[in-house]
Image (cartoon, rainbow, N blue to C red; front, side):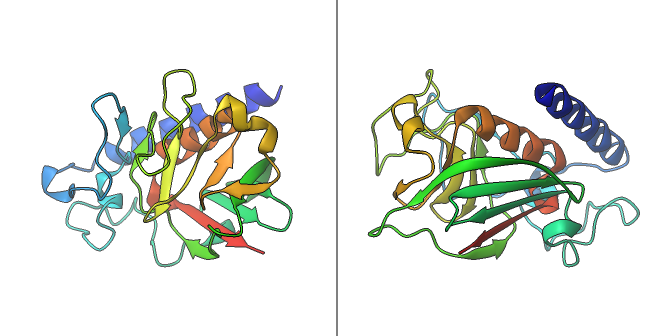
Length: 204
């Protein structure tokens, strides 16, 4: 039943994006070189709306269809992920309602996950491996599958099979790890709605 609800939400999100992009021209001038470059075997997913990469560039935005990025925060955003460090839990809200809660792994004592209130900066990758902390590979998708970079090197991503048992503990190098199935749910929602309509809160 839960998977069916996720599926309906994802389809709804795709339909919304399709409607919103009918009258919007996407220019290659809006895409900048990202700080993270994919490896040769990395599948990259750019934000659905390329204006998300440059939130201050409104040259190709439709005034009637683009949410004011200055006013969308937390529950006001279509997608809100609240990570509570003391509970090692992500609360995932969609369209103002709590969709689900997921166990997470956050930073250890030497690599603390910082508090944040912001939109994810991107980019997004279906499969990705950390060069700084190599090791592990989830079904050929690297050790950071379904990754959404939030700020700099901090990201929300799926964990590897060997680390699934560590969910709920503070043992990462600063990133927020999810079960790969849950990471895919979050990744698909962010991809469908866009990073400009997503808000990340990391609190104690």
